[in-house]
Image 1 (cartoon, rainbow, N blue to C red):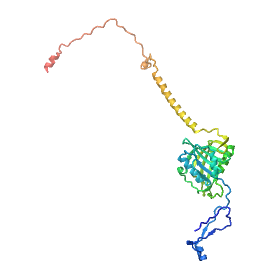
Image 2: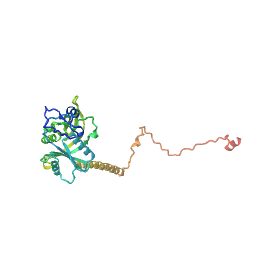
Image 3: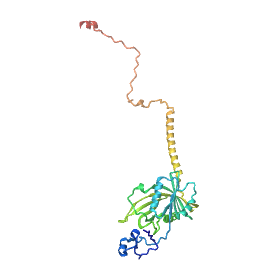
Image 4: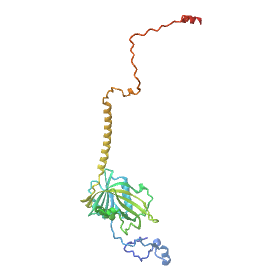
Length: 341
């Protein structure tokens, strides 16, 4: 049986009917064309999307070595949500970031999402327009993957998303640049071969606390309400560069605090609390050691004194007269009383 290829896209017209392909059973000669063809004909339906794929945006999503399981699952979730993405092997730490431009050229990609891990606990994300720029570097925080969240939302794999941006993106120039970069990177091109011609979920980018909060919601058909799908993460902007993975700095976040400095402040605060407790203990010891003052007069001595009239003091100058004791002569002695018994 010979294989039949069918070209989709520009060759498909709106008024074109379904193609009928002939298969000959047992590899023999055709016989009874009228009856045999009816039995062996297979109908191939026309393509769902009848437009032409013109936007050739492709996004390369990969990382450096040293990432943890959470980052790996996050990359897999992004590749699942973005049908126009491509994957590559992990890049060595010793390589310079400019090498990524060559990797994008080899993979025929013009956008790149690169996850850089440091100290096995800090995760940085580069989003770049390869090879001419611009590019932005973020610190990724509060990562929650699809498998971890277990949300009730769900959407069709390969469907095209809507992008929703906070109104603050239009107020400042660096946020406007990031909005255009996010739009070109996360939006699925129309009529992409791996995409589905449906719009059933929304990517939201919200600015709060000088950070960009990413969420993914499903659009429910009944009442157009939103149910979160996942994943979710927070991007803390560090710098925006003119070139791809380098070049002159266009913007630097003045409120950004590196993770090393944050951990250092936490350690210093804990050390200050310990020192304060030690000082309190030393002060208590000094209070105990200090000599106590002797109390000359008891304060409680006059508690039970009641006011009364003073009596004249009588002083006897002569000795008192002795008392005369008269003995009972009729009283028997003790031995006599004992003898009577």
